[in-house]
Length: 374
Image (cartoon, rainbow, N blue to C red; front, side, top):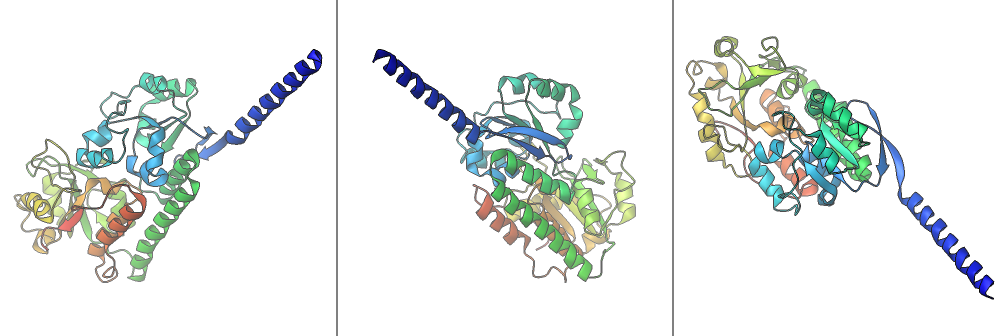
């Protein structure tokens, strides 16, 4: 009898052990993700611990607020430091964001592989420029068994926007939402280009963009082949910075801008702190505040004679709009100035408001893009 009881107890233990193995197997799986650079990365899902280097709003759109319950570390400077007004909006609705551990930032040399490894993440999402600039750090992280997934919205390449969005969704288990967002972006992107084609193709209007961060006395960065620069050429405009910069971004000589006599000027603003002379855009900016800060740029010496100033074609636009999952909003706004008849029924503000309402946990408000003169 005792022997039978022992056998029975042993069999029950075996059954429980096998059942546990089956449950674990059913809930764990290794998936292969293709990131923005076309790298094949193996991830054990579901992931429970995530470290995020950039593209915070894109991560939020794809995963929802729930995705942040798995985030254990971020690069704080590119969000809290660069755009604190936006960070504070998200901190109000994401309970763990304000106290989120910081892994440092590649731009200022503070990125720490040791901090990433100490957080024991199941995956690290990094921006393309971080991945390329930190080979030693990424080798250390991968040697610790932490997979790295590269995300890139900066290059303004349709395929990278889509692959980045789908990669986030596949890793985080929100594939349906990521597919919906990827399809939305592709549809809006192609719709803009289709309208341009129907209007007769490239406008060939000259366009100049400048980072309006330090005030009109300081010449801010312009862009070529990436971010704003790539957007302009995609939309059929002539970017006057092309061929004049030593890299993908940098200041353009003041005399060169005047000599080129651009048809449109865009000054990229944001909600930077401790930048009193910056062009102000974002959730807390009113049209009056934005126009007042933009007007100082329009008053620059030598600018009054340029076509863009004479025709009222100097604009403020949120700098963050040039490298996001919702940058089709910026495309709509710029295209509307390049091809007014073809885009007269397009409302970029309404597009951005709708995106917020459906995919972001913060309410739409403020001023993101507008001309100096109403």
